[in-house]
Image (cartoon, rainbow, N blue to C red; front, side, top):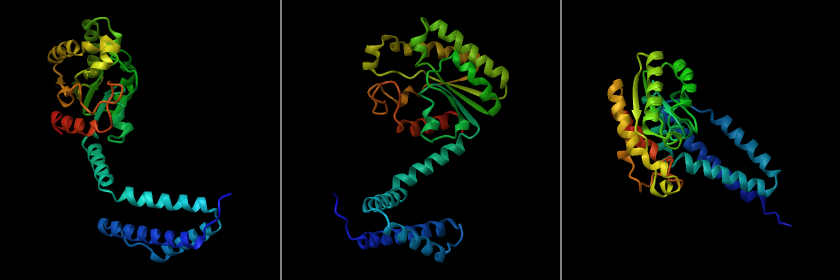
Length: 262
């Protein structure tokens, strides 16, 4: 059985941490001009917390200390502030844009870089099943639409021609229902070599892209080759060699911002 430690030691630690939290909170509120904080209320809340902790098991007290420490470290780290600033920036920049796509586009909202209203994407989507997402995009009525499909289509279509025919139908349907929206087609991303060895059909991305670029010229939509951002040995790739780590998406969004003239 674990021996109990003196609770006053933890009380002192908690008090110090809470005091730090209060100081940090005061500094942040002062910087943001959000108004003054009621110090008496904060002190009373801290006292109440300490009284509750004294009646708890030591292990629970330790968890509380760890939690407060974690919050202090995370919220005041340069990376925390930088990431949240960047995400807020991207959400603002792309607020009138919708990214349609598959599991390569879906992380834009899953990782919090864009609002859910700027991403209509789903794992497994291809240029055929994408038609099911058009009503949602029409409701959002975006000024710009970015299409990212292909990784699933490489395994689905027997020929490049079939892929292009279906992609043309998707783009034409979007243009018909959202005539004022500008449409951008992102290239089919390359798949890393070891993944291509397991599924050779992935090797066709260059063929798909050549025909896709020709299609975009025909339909007067913009083709964007984002493959220049990721070589096949890039560290941006996830372990499966197909998808991307979260670290890739800020680079892609910066690139897309320029391409979309935002």
